[in-house]
Amino acid sequence: MVSSTLINGVVIAVLAILLIAAAVDDLREFRIPNHLVIGIAALYPAHVMTAAQPIAWMYALGFAAVVFVIGFVFFAMKAMGGGDVKLMAAVSLWAAPHHLITLFVITLAGSLVIALVFAVRTAAAEARAAQTNSLGTMVANLRHVPIFKMQIPYGVGISAGGLYIASQYLIGQG
Image (cartoon, rainbow, N blue to C red; front, side, top):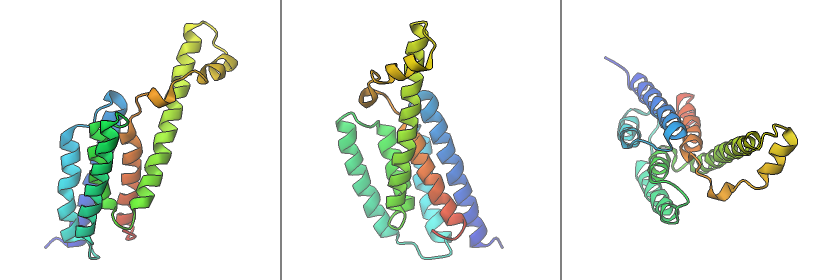
């Protein structure tokens, strides 16, 4: 008979694979496929049933619902994409209640890094277009990059946070 610990490890490994796929898809296409988000959410009951420690799954559902509603407000304001909102809610299900703040911090940090990379890339492209491939021109162009209007693949930051949560479950800290 297969132990529940082994099954839980496989579930978390599949979660990690789905998170990486979501990050890659969002980075490449600015789109997170629904089947990945559904897979992440659908794995959660298997995790609850096979976890070594009891899971406060009812709290997790509540927190995930609140995260989805808040995300929907950001979506309505055109500050986040629909896939990002759904992914954040699905990953929040895994993080709540103990790791939710950590998930938010890692997501924010990862998204800021991605935004900075995109801003530098945009400024460098403008410097190349002006045929002044200097570092000074690129830095000067950074001032004009509309960072708050840029399309950011938040799925990368969300997935980074989710991978951290998965790692915590694997080492028994979840």
